[in-house]
Length: 351
Image 1 (cartoon, rainbow, N blue to C red):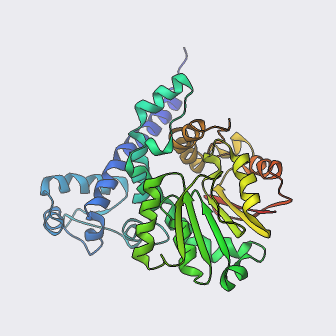
Image 2: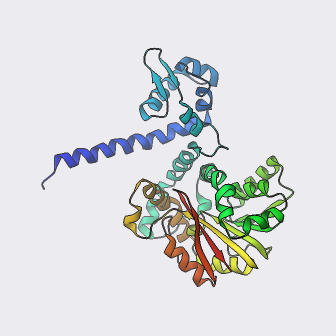
């Protein structure tokens, strides 16, 4: 076997980066849980000071800070021995309600990896692994991961891109948000459109309970309701708008779900489908964003779909052609790409 040493060293460099990132994920979750980033955002400090402010052990903080600086998640001043966060780092690491919040993604990743034994077994048998069987941090991390991107785009860009929908919402519309998880998207719409009524549904009872609590905390529980129901069984129509956020590709029977959505829509209703950004071919997705989605999909999306009836397992990189075919097969008359970001594509389906 002839080994090209230059290419081998390039590959080993990738390995070192990936191994460091894998272990750094746990440290980012620790920093978030203990409030280390929020404390460090207050200004430069030495390890002992950060430990005192956060009620933590100095030796652990010392090692944690060194790793954060080595990974580019903190700044280190060798002259003073102080660590700090840049404005950009603080912006992305400290505000769970802001438009960018990175720790939620790592919380989801670390929690998803706890299912490795089950996923390895599923590789051998072809069986599914249901969403509800995962660690609780998968559900909380998922909500914290997706909410910032929804907060940044849903009200300002995605809904206005749909034909006539924003006006209906401001006047007062009936909305169903299916596969809502802990209700991040549902509550954003309820807060922005007080004349509309929003119904969120998900088959995972614990997530629905968390969504109800969050609605009460945000003071919108009077105009939003949550129910435990699947995409094939939710009721309450006719709706002016039905939404699915990063959920259709997780379903074992997306065509059945699409047919049920159509049945629940008003005659002039709209279905907004938000899916992960994906190109038409595998080669189009062989990039850093595609790697994130394929990796999450292997542990979460495909196993979940395979655990359900229906025979589908689209995965998180299904692409526009596949989504269009599902919508068309379900009987919708109109389908188009309405908006996009580097991480999502928004589709509009008309009854």
